Structures are given as C-alpha cells and as structure tokens.
Amino acid sequence: MTPFVDLAARLAAEPADAALKDVVLTIAATCARISRVVAAGALSGSLGAAGSTNVQDEEQKKLDVITNDMLSDALKACAPVAGLASEEMEEVEPTGRVSGYLVTFDPLDGSSNIDVNVSVGTIFSVLPAPVDHAPTEGDFLQPGRNQVAAGYAVYGPQTMLVLTLSGGVDGFTLDAEGQWRLTHPNLSIKADTAEFAINMSNQRHWAEPVRRYIDGCLKGKDGPRGKNFNMRWVASMVADVHRIMMRGGVFLYPWDAREPDKPGKLRLMYEANPMSLLVERAGGRSIQGAEDMLDLQPTKLHQRVPVALGSANEIEIVRAEMIAG
Ligand code: AHG
Ligand code: MN
Ligand code: MN
Image 1: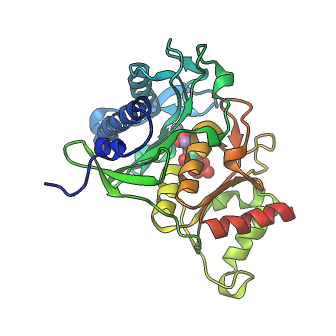
Image 2: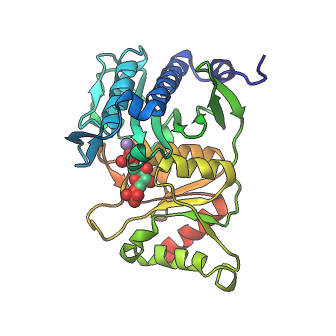
C-alpha cells in the first residue's frame, strides 16, 4: 500500500463543486496519457515539425498538434466544459453547452526542447463560463483573479502535476499505474532567493529596469545586492517555474526590443495567468510591468505579456526597478 493519496481522494477534501473537479480530473487524466506519448519520443513517431504554423506564426511541432487534439477531444467530451481555447487554436471553441467552465491551455510548453529530450509540460487555466449563452472570445477575457483552478504537468525525470483550486498548491507524481499521487502537499515558495532565470542572450534588447536588476545580480557579493546569484534557464516555462516551486527563485521573460510592438513573448491567458495563480497561492508574486499579473484585464485571447514571477521579496525588488523606470 502506497502512503500517498491519489488525486481524486485529495479533491474530495476540496470545497469546489463536483463539476469543477470533473474538469480537473479530465485534464489530469489527459496529461497522464500525454506523458506516455512524450516519453515514447521517436518510438511514437511524434518528434519533429508538423509542417504548419499556429496563430502566433510559430512553427508547430507534431507534438504541439497531437497534444492539442488530445486535450480538445477530452474537454469537448467533459460535460461541465462550455468552451475551450488553446495556444494552438486561432479561435475559441464553444462545446455547444452553456454554463459550467471555460478552459484555456498551452498543450505543450517548451516546444524547442521536445526533440532534445529536455522537460516540457502542459499548462491550463479554468474560468467560470457565462450562464445564459454559448461562450464567445469576450467571455474568456477575464482577469486571472477569476480563475477557479489552474495547474501544469511537467514531463521530466518524474511526471508531476501541480495544481490549485480554491486553496493551496499541491504537487502529484504520476505512478507506474498512471495514477497521480500526492507527493508534495501545500507547496510554498520561499520568500528570499539568490537564483534567477532569464534568457541572457536577449540582454542587449532589454529595457533599463531589467538591465539594472540583472546587472545587480551579476555583480554578486561586491555589488548592490551584497550576495552572489546563480542562474538557471531551461527554456520551458513549465520546468523553470517548477524549479521555483521546489526551491525558490525568479523567472523573467521581459519585454524586449526585438519586436517592440509586442509586449512580451509569453501569453497571458494560458501561460502567465495560470502560472501566476499557482505562484501567488504558494506565497510568491507575479507581475507584468509594476502591476500584479492577476489584475490585468485581458483585451484579446492570444495577448502577450511581460512576466516576472517567483520568490516574493525578490519580485518586490524587480517591481521597485520597474517603478523607478
Ligand atoms: P511554447 O513552446 O509553448 O511556444 O512556449 C515556449 C516559451 C516558454 O516555455 C519559454 O519560457 C520560452 O518560450 C523560451 O523562449 P526562448 O528560449 O525562445 O527565449
Ligand atoms: Mn508555452
Ligand atoms: Mn505550447
């Protein structure tokens, strides 16, 4: 007998309604199936490019398309889901049902890492659906604070699911029988850190506040921060955020001057918002510019945002740099 309770048993202790638990269990079961496809790699014929592009004009990998189809099919068959939206689908998809929940997802985060066997993941966000009509894009444009559940699966050395409903953040590990087992209850991000994650190759394109912040970290013990910093960058947001969940740190994907009209690289509705809810619930902070991410009123489905999230005290230092301008 394993001492670790399974996901359904853990959810039974949640005050959330049965319909929401059904949605979360459906996503979790699909992520368990995705993990098998990802793990099979070349054996499943799923590596490499799909030969198509998505709405962001990014080249789709076969696994982007496969995982998007798996999640879409599962959510369309899940009775409480009224609509879904994905990084890999241009438009929102109503399911033909009214009321219940809306789900947004990044079916496979970290596409650049798929073919080299580095951790990738799935990110999802659940919002309340309108009660009197089939959902349209406008119904999805709710601030992150409205999320009723959010989570991610990371397909790494262990496959893990990290999620939050109404309360704290729990981490589950996928066992050999395909069950999610509660191995990391009540995750908490330590407030102080000396570790940052950022794509340093974009340094010359950053705005002044981000340059100042990272310069301060790089100067180490003799600089303004008075301590040495370590750097980690996996280039899968899921894996970088998961590391922060486990041992603290900050993750930044700031605005940069490569494409000055785009506010950032990462997407609000299915990357930044769900990760921000998880981070805040675990005691961390998440900001865009100097403002809390979760307060941002979205204006379009595939909206991009600058992101800085992680250990609370460190993010307040980033925020102070943003305010100083
Ligand atoms: P996706 O694979 O869903 O398009 O997301 C990739 C994102 C994110 O996971 C990561 O933090 C970032 O892109 C990495 O970007 P670069 O390495 O290109 O800077
Ligand atoms: Mn992504
Ligand atoms: Mn993706």
